[in-house]
Length: 257
Length: 312
Image 1 (cartoon, chains in turn brown, blue):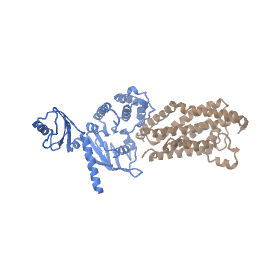
Image 2 (tube, rainbow over the protein chains, first blue to last red):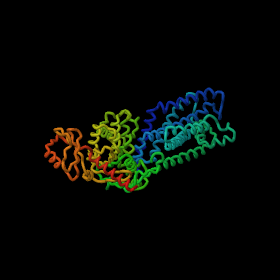
Image 3 (cartoon, chains in turn brown, purple):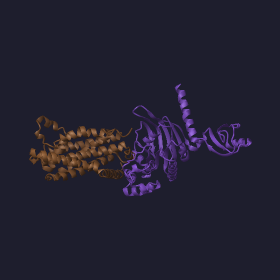
Image 4 (cartoon, helix red, strand yellow):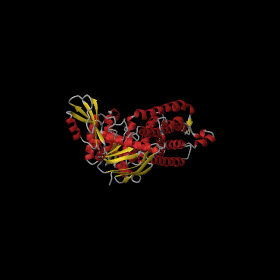
């Protein structure tokens, strides 16, 4: 692999992705900000007042890290799936496939684009959250590393989805039927300690639970699960999904006859 | 070292269709090479495999000595591709499309911008550099794809029907441009349905049909294989019926237009002598059909005849 070629290729790809996100900001940045504002108003402000405290914090404070993480996850996923599938559908993915840029660089470039959009939206949602509640970051390193890792996991998942997708319907099935339910059941709005024992155990099979809790630990200092487990699981997902994507691209699955 | 060497290349698609049945051909550096064939003959499949867009079933492909199985990145760096179908991001600007492509080939942005100015200028797109590609005409989009393919200054340029759907004026200007870059040393492989285009531009021709190469020779050799040519003569005076010219087949098109078939063992001097003997004055003459087109049809039809005989 020619490192110089791949480094310039990666920078080009990331730049292209940033331009794409900012060019269509009305589709990429604004909608999640509006959605999250509504969550803060309805769940945090109106309903939250009646709920009272959770995990030693008022409800608005408790759900804020989860909502930030939820916006990061969905936007990282959505960016990669729409960008890569769009390039595949419009055939301009061929621009990359004919070039000497490696498949690993193509994956990293798209994932970086997803992570950047996730962080942009996450930052905006954090600012919105600060308009509703006070947030101070207890463990900055945990907060930053977990948001980056979680964003990477879902950007990689978005890439898998885009590789297999054949039509536009295929890129909305996973977010609708898998991602959204897992996010809602991933401890964004509640502590799993509120669930019966059986459902607590079932919840432990949901990877989003670990990400939300580790991120909440980073900001508020409380978590339902072990942070070490969270890092272990997220790390395994990053490595496993990157390897899977590399195998898929090397074999030409979904992109080469 | 050959620009392109293909040995026993086969491709069978998942549905069982055998697009390539073990083709072999070599392209010399600096050549202008035509790959002709009817629709579905295997031209685009061959180009797709050479450019790593399609996985081959078996065989060997080397580009300037780089095997696409073992040195794929070095092989890819040598090629520029102008595909048959439009494959540009129509929402991106003209300049971004070519500069990004340069980046994928490892060319730093500053140099890419300089080259973009040169290539877009050559292809008369520099004034439109900040326009989104969707606002360009069909001919401009084709020219943009050529500029994009040249931005990393490839040694081998593959053009898959680059002038399809382009008007005559733009087609001619694209021909001039392609001649210039070929003269400057770029090896070019061209597939086209416009056989006049291949005859005008290319020095070597391979004809592919049903996944097999049925002709592979210098253009001059191929043209010499023509068995006969049909000329249409414009006459000074009208004729009521086709004259009997010894050794030539004749037919009236209109009362002042005579169609004459000249076999390979005859020539135009003899034809004019015969016309002169009968006092027929010719104002002008033209080829009825493109010569290469005739040969192409002869070769394809004779192959089909052989195939049908084999079936019987």
